Amino acid sequence: MSSTSALHTPVASPTGLSLPLTLLLAAGAGLAVASLYYSQPMLGVLGADIGASDQAVGFVPTLTQLGYAMGILLLAPLGDRYDRRRIILIKAAVLVAALLAGGAAPGIGMLLAASLAIGLSATLAQDIVPAAATLAPEAHRGKVVGTVMTGLLLGILLSRVVSGFVAEHFGWRAMFMGAAVSIALIGLAAARGLPRFQPTTQLAYSALLGSLGQLWRRHSALRRAALSQGLLSVGFSAFWSTLAVMLHGEPFHLGSAAAGAFGLAGAAGALAAPLAGRIADRRGPELVTRLGTGLAAVSFALMLLSPLFSVPSQIVLIVISAIGFDLGIQASLIAHQSIVYSIEPGARSRLNAVLFVLVFVGMAVGAALGSILLAQWGWMAVGALSTAAALGALAVRLWPSRQVAY
Image 1 (tube, rainbow, N blue to C red):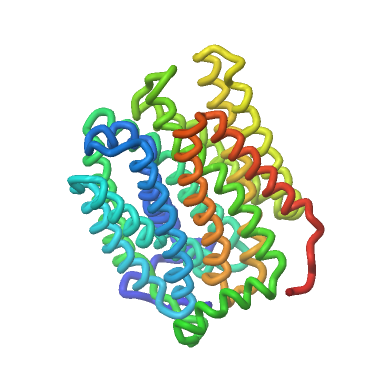
Image 2 (tube, rainbow, N blue to C red):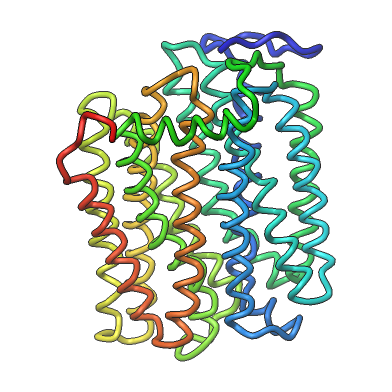
């Protein structure tokens, strides 16, 4: 895939991209995907403010993740068919409108509708990552994609820290409004600095979507990567979507700022992304996927020991667990992307779509099941779900690979 210059083409750097453009792509991916997670540390105060039950507000992250999965399935493949620059700008405008609607929502109904729209339009992050892979020359593609993915992963994890602080001091509506401003600024910068992209296929939309199934059937490596990362996402989302509600109640009585601060522990996973990429280059991505899924399973299992400790010690244990499973899950994601992007370069957007559809279906399932389990059986049930999901992901990676399509 090639790109043709827009009016403001970036000056080439040794990697084929200017540093400002690389940082713009990283910031755009991070801020877009952060929109999916701002609500999670705010659920305790948000529900009380609009008069919604814990179970009802639990569907805010569920619909956001479901919308993201739908957007990846229905919209992300368009990056192979149309100019990615135009797609990014349109989605940025829609995301701004959806965030403003969420911040102005008078009740749970409008907030749930806005959450679905936020998920759909936040998929601009999944247009930015293949755009970075396209703009980067072959010799530096891993470095450029790794930089953009670091921005994306930091957006996922630090979003909770920011939203927890903002909600505690300025209210949850201010967080939605601030997020809308950040995406508007990214859209303006992208309109000025992002070059245009040449489509790699002329397939009609229906055929484009149909090719997703063909890619799934043809490539066992794609199936294993998507299933494994999807299972890890179940545990990841179950933890983060219930943490704020759990900490808000007995015996912790902690506010949204404290819940958001747990994102600092998870940020260690984003810092591991370049290291995971280097190990994958030297030893192969398969080793990284097995190490990552195994670490996630052990870390989730640690939470099951929390009833044996005092309240302060339980908090320390949860922090240690968060560092461990975020490290394992993000390392696995980098390795799975290395596997998927190497399959068919001309279908990179569609391959990326298949991988992330299962990732965010897993996120939606984890958020829904986590909320139900927390309400019915408590925090230990959430920990058991996350542990089982990570063990399932490890089993997928250990299962002998099938080299033929079915």
